[in-house]
Structure formats: C-alpha cells, structure tokens
Image (cartoon, rainbow, N blue to C red; front, side, top):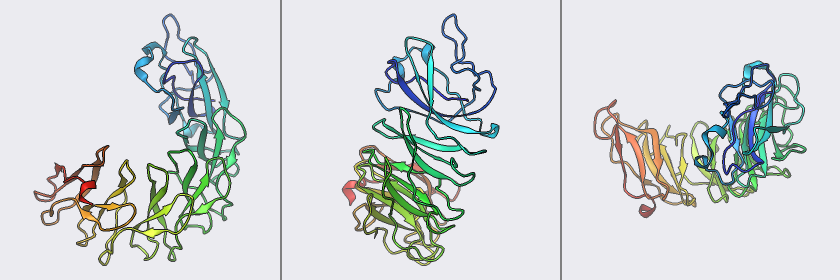
Length: 346
C-alpha cells in the first residue's frame, strides 16, 4: 500500500498525516536522514499526491529539513486506492499506518478526503461498497468504523466531489443525485452521521444545484442553482441544518445568469459574485449581503464587449476586492484594479 506525505506541524511524536495511497510495488524510499536512506513504509511507491494534516500547531519552519518527509502518492491507475492514516515520530525514523476506509470492492477508489477543522474526523468520497457508486463516509482520524453519511442513492446515483465540512466540525454538506438520477441536489448531514437534510428548494424539471459555499461561521450555505427557472442560475441561502431557502440574487434579464465561482467574505456577511445582471452577456462584479438585500456593482462600466473575468479575490478583512477585467481597454487587454470597499458600500 502506498501512503502519502509528511511530518508537519509541531514535530511532536504522534503527529498525524492523512493520505491516499494504492497497492503497488514501487521502491517507496523516503528522503535520507544523515547516514540513512530508508523506506518510510515498506513496498510503497513515491509520486505526488493528495494529502492532509491534522490541524494542530502547523509550522513547517519548526521542522528540520532532514525530518520533512516528501509527499508520497496516489498512483490511481495502478489499482485499489485506500485512505490511510499514519503517524511519524520526530525522534525516530519510524511510521505506523492505519487504513481508515473499510474494505473496498474490486476497482474501488477513494476519490477525495478532508480532515475536520477540530482534527477529529476524516471525511472521504469513495466507491467503497459498490464499484462506480460514489458515496461519502466519515471515520475517526485515529481509526475505527467508517460511517456512510449520504442517504440511500437511487440507481446510478452518486455523491460528487467538492463536499465541505463546516468550520465548527459539526456538519458536512455535499452534492449528489441522491433522490433523482441525473438531478444534482444539495444535502447536509452531521459529521458523525445521522439524519440527512436536503437544503435546496424544489427544483424545476432538469434543474440542478451547480455549486455551494458554507459561510465561514458555519451557519448558512449559499448555493447556485437553476432552481426556479431552467438554465437561469441564481443564488440562494439556506440554514446549514435545513429550513426554507431564500433567493438572494436580484432579478436577472432574459438569459442572464450568476456565474460559477462566487466568494463569501470571512465575516460571513457578503457574497461576491459575477453575473450578466445588468446587460446580457456582459459579466460584471457585484457584492450582495448573505442575508439578502440590494446588490452593489463593484466594477466601473467595461469598454464595449468588455467583461470582468473569473479572476477575483477578496481581502481577508472583507474591505477590498481585487479583480481582473477588460474595463479600461479593448477586449484582450486586461487590467488589475481595486474597487471601493465592499462592506462599507452595503
């Protein structure tokens, strides 16, 4: 079995790193300590990989270079993927590993995973019980029984990549065509398992939830969906544990849409999003209270055929947005500019 990465954090014995790995016969050699060139885990193959670290005292500068274990990997094409947990000692070149996922079906894979912010639990998506039927599971980071988080899936239903864990480690939110094959909806479930709650409102025929973000305070979920009108993508807010969903984006022109890639400020107050909200096929940048209300256009009027691109970021204090646009010059010549403060404008 191949495991991934590294000793990170405070360097104390027992620091826990989570990695995906596969069965394989590579040399598995780790970086050398002075006078050593030993394998981290026998029979493992090194390549780049997905990995995560138990979030406690993470400070790579405190770890001597000789003790930093290079990331090992997920060679997905090689076969059976397993989610593994192992600890490394800062005082000895040793490792122990515990497989976190349950026994996989033939050709099953762990597709992605995250560690909860309190470091207690690993959540992962895998076709663990049935090949090509992706489900979502949680398992204690120290090992134990894995719990299926999603509700029963319809035939050909799947959980999709891109789930999120709330900042308080209380709930997991995920997308799945759980109830209707081919219709993607939004669900919330306690981290340790329990009642699954559908978060989106009723969808029009062939409508789907496209993407979502949990607010940093863990209280709400903002999602993008063509919930009310087919192929008109709009923003909605819903409490993370369930309740009535509320459309928060303003009315759009015919064929107008809110585009994928919205952001939420760190104080959970404001959504920053792109939309052709005022002029069809002209993407502009807006700020909108998560609680609902009037939106504020952030960019100046673009030149003819100009647009705000998908490249924008919000400052940590939520006061500024940096965005890229062909706002001042003709299409193809992009500018990097700063709009007025977001929060103060709302």
